[in-house]
Image 1 (cartoon, rainbow over the protein chains, first blue to last red):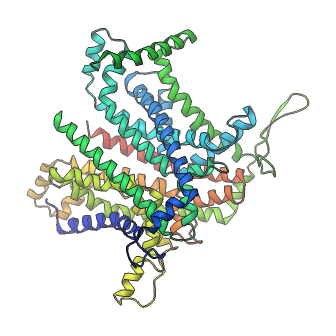
Image 2 (cartoon, helix red, strand yellow):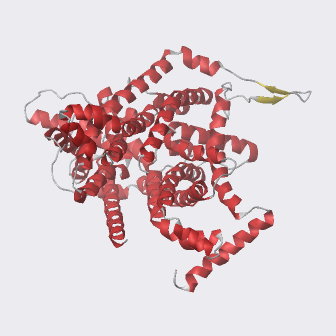
Image 3 (cartoon, rainbow over the protein chains, first blue to last red):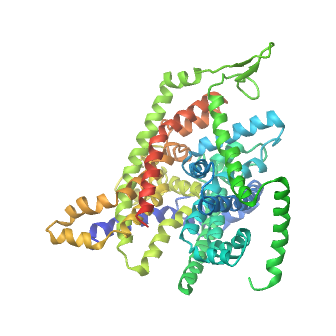
Length: 266
Length: 318
């Protein structure tokens, strides 16, 4: 059974469906006209407009900071969760942890956002922390849902990993901590990097959860974009999209090439 | 780790942490287990319990906008008040029932469309040369890494009244009036299918790529036509992938907020949007919480289906 004409046609249609909107975003970001869909000539004016918009720049910086901090927290916690679930055997509460670690993946964003906001409000009434909403509350919220994704990545790498290296080090008298830092960590490092990048991207992209847990004066980039496009298309958003798509495309291609080189070496 | 400098520095920090923990009476193993468990308990489990609690509280004007559930009486008695009014309100007001039904319907139709597009794609990739397979897989995953919000926005430019599709059709003389595509239910289907297509392709691909080629040959040798082979051999064997992929589209689609609010019309009622408005526009936290609890109840069965299917997909790996 080979690939028939029908499957080939459907596959081409599928890929076109995936990429046509992205290509149009990029093309019309260089358009001169205010209309996003009628080509009038090449221009970089929307890129200039973007960088002169102080609200967009401030939101962009805030979003990058939140993404970097929450991706790091998520990677540390996700790695600990991955190690706990694959290497530490049975313990009380393992089922609970397994459930809690995968549940955020299927939790609707509106519920995650609502529940965390209600928690922060209740905590503030009880103990006076976190004292207003903004950077801290968004970072905590993002760390929590990104951690679930990091755990999936790290856990599958730990399951695939050849355990005889760990055991050899253990037999030679290394403490579990030493085995982890000197043997396991270097081997699963690629998984940690892709987990961190995934968490970073997810945090940078989140609109719904951030809208619930942010406070006045702490609008993230997606929140600013959403308020711009809610009423219709806006060409400076196309320029922003092109920058993001460019950075992501370069990053993913580089990661794939590095990954491919690693595989051929191994 | 060849140079000593690199190894010693973290080890000193390590010794410090370990020493400090053992002084408090926590072993390293327990600390490793406790950190993620406590974080998730505090920032995932307890928040859901807070939602449950507030769903049973009465609305009140003020900050926070609900009445406390627990109250200490003058005689030091604890009184607990459960208000079912929020749930009764949701059940009686047709708006909520319609929103739930609509969400399930829209999510189901989108899932079916995504399946029809994704299955041939997964088959195409699974049957490709080894050389191109990783490239094709990367092409499926790549859009997922770019901003979800901006990809939905791209469709606004495509489907709008002055959008690319209308302009092209007008230019070709196929139509002489722009078609209304944006702010319709159809646009919401397109948005959901587009956003979640990679989640459908990947699990189906995983089951198809492991399919034993000899089974297909045996079926052909026994005289089955290709379509018969597909129905009786290939489809049943790829079922775990189909179920996992379908649930990965269906579950997030139910609670979707961004797609219906950007691509859908004012009449495209979906429950994620209702919850959002209840919270941000009406500031009725108890009703918003009750809406969330009912949404979770609806999702229990799909989530169970997903976890069973995912286990089946992974098991075949071993």
